Length: 323
Ligand code: FAD
Image 1: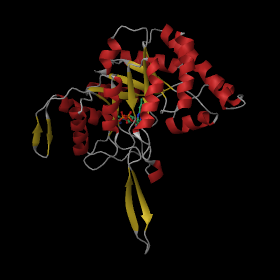
Image 2: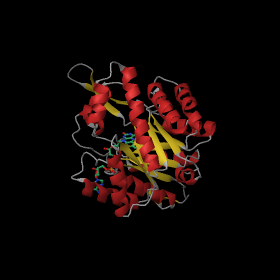
Image 3: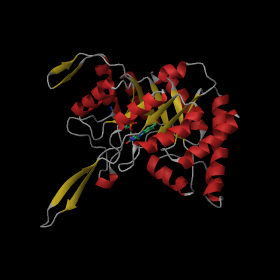
Image 4: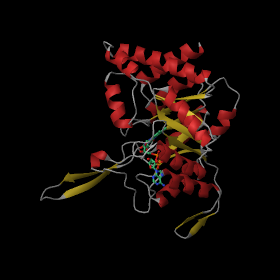
């Protein structure tokens, strides 16, 4: 079932989660364990992140190097299919421009369609800093921006896609989600510029948006208002992220380019240990959730990475919000 159809169902609030797939070397049991922890919240959907491949050059003597391509979290399409079949809720497969050219994207979409996965979250991906990339570099014949990937999926849906001269005539039925940034995407020149690019992306066929994490509701509320004024009328789902250690408040701005409000910084810096950080996080997220619901926001999306420590924080928040 499409995520957007689930969002239209009559419910007090729609809850959803993002998890990362188990790393290479860990079995599917880890994903099942995490799902078992998430199902009591009756989620409307769970999305599964995708991770770009890493190209490594290892020395093999004589000043020569062997190129090794690592896919640290491969195999997500069959995993999504397995989880959707087992749990009966929409599973959203993240798909990136990074690591894929147009043909590989077409094959991935084909594989998803074969196993009846209908929900795809289309993203560009970040520059691979560890590989020295200062800006995002698409694959040869790949996509530069998420909007191009979205256009390809939309053409697939219409049965108007061609591959190696062969026309894809079977229509698919993908519900397309995409990312947005209440505090602006870090590369964008300014908020207006970012919003105009978001509008272009939505017009390529996006059905709903999920925001980057934010800790100041005002950022989300004014962004939602500006998006509406710009003519973006699809659902915008707020992304909330539990904190589980003091290190988080220093890492998140660097990795995700977001602000941490000073009051939250003080709460976390005054915490004596991780358990006190989690308490502060529960308090903060509960207030965020309460205010968003009061303002009529109908859904909350929690980033968990599939970590039990983060799910425990969400559990506490959930009980405080809904009893
Ligand atoms: P885009 O929408 O392509 O935008 C990227 C930048 O380009 C923006 O600054 C935008 O303003 C600008 N831009 C867009 N179009 C144009 C244009 N035509 N001309 C000029 N500028 C333009 N990363 C992963 O690797 N795996 C994941 O699973 C993953 N999941 C995510 C889930 C969520 C909810 C979010 C918010 C992010 C996620 N990311 C993930 C991170 C994401 O890949 C990065 O934030 C990335 O830097 C941008 O991706 P995007 O799809 O928003 O890019």
